Length: 520
Image (cartoon, rainbow, N blue to C red; front, side, top):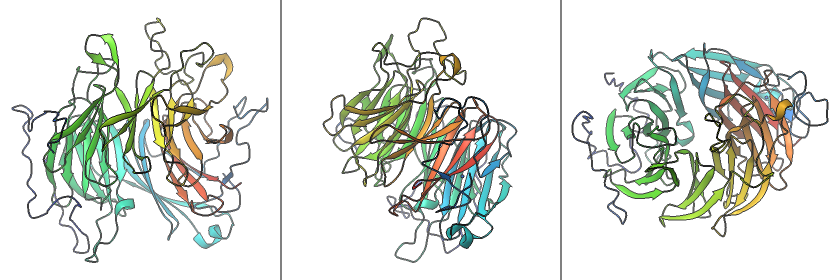
C-alpha cells in the first residue's frame, strides 16, 4: 500500500519524546534483499447491567451481586445466561479479534475501536444521554454512534490501539494528535483521527501485523510487529516515516511449538527509552530506538525437545516492580518469566501449569480450543495467555497469570526464584468437566482486584487477596469465546474504587460493553 500523509493541524505536537525531529531519517526497507539492519544481539551494550451508583456510562452491575443465573449456588451458568451488557455492538460480519478503548471522563464518552475477521475496523462512541443524570446515580440509556473506518483491508484486522491516554500538552501549548492505529494481516497499518474516524495515514507495514502499540510519551510513535517474518517496525506518525526495522527474532517456521515463528507482542518501556518485543522463538528482546540495535536478548522458553525449537512467548506486560523495570511474558510451555530490563536478569520463573496430581484442571477447554491434538497429553492446557502486574498502589511485585487451563494465579515475585503463588482463582467446571480458559486480564489500578475474560464468554472479577470470585458478568451467549478485552477504571482513585467499564471482542461478531460497580 502506498503511504499517504495528511498535514497535521498546527495545534498538534509532532515531536516524539526520544527523537530529534531535525535528524529524523526514514529507513528504506527492502526485505527481498539484505536485512535492513544487523540482528546482532549485542548483549553488553550497543545501544455495564442496570443499577444506581457511580455509573460511568449506564447502569452498573454491582460487584457484590451474583451476576449469572444459577441452580447450584455457584456463579456458573446452569440454564439461561443473561445479557448484562449495557451495549452490544454488532457491526462486524465475523469474529471480533481486537478492541481498544479510551474513556473521556469530562464528557462521559467511551471510544471503542474494534477489528475482526471480516477485514473491517469500526470506531464506536458510547455516551449517556445525560452525563449529569448518570453522575447523580440515575440510569441513562447509552447513546451509540458507529463509524466504519474507511480502509478496505484484504485480510483480518488483528490489532488496534488508541494513543489518547498519552496525548497531553507540552511546554509549547501543543498536544499530539489523538490517533487510532489499525493493524491487519494484509501488511498495512492505518492511522485515523480518534475523534472523527477520518483516515490520516496509511503505512506499509510488515507482513501479518500481529500488534500495534503507541509510544507512552506523546503517542507520536507507533510500534508494529509481524507474526510471520519476525520483524518489528517503528514509525513516526506525523512525518509518516519508518524510523527503524528491528530484526533478530526468528520468523516463518523458525520457532514456536507449532512451527510458527514471528513476534507475538511488543511495546515500549514506560519511560519510552526502549522498545520490547516477545517472539515465538522463545526470546524477549530489548531494542534501542535510535540505533536499531538489540541491547539484550532473554532466551526464556525451554527447548521443547524438537531440536532447537523453543516454546513461543504469547503475551507481554511491562511496568512492574517499584522501579517500573520488571516485564513479564507468558509462554506456550505453561511458564511465565519475569525479567528486570535494566539489570538484564531473569528475576523469576513462574510455573503456571501445575503437573502435580490434582493440581491441573481436567477436561477439555470449554470453547473447543485445540487441546492435546495428538492425544499424547503432552501439551494439554499448558499455554499462558494473559499476564499483568498489580498497580503501584496495590503491590508492584504482584503478578497475575492466566492460562488455557482456566486458572488465574496471583504471584509475589519480591524474592525472585520461582515466586510465591499467593492465590489460584478458577471458575467451576461446566457439565462434562470442561474448563473455561483465560484470554485476557486487567488489574484494577488502585485495588487488589483482577478482571479476566474467558473462553466461555464471561468476564469475572477476582479478589487477589483471598482468591474469591467477586462477580461474573455475561453477554447472553454461553460458550462463545472472548478474544480480546479492554478495561477502563472510572473514578479508580475514589475510596470505593469507582466503576469498571469493560469492552470485550467476541467470536460471535459482537463487541460488548459492561459496567461493574466496584464498590457494590
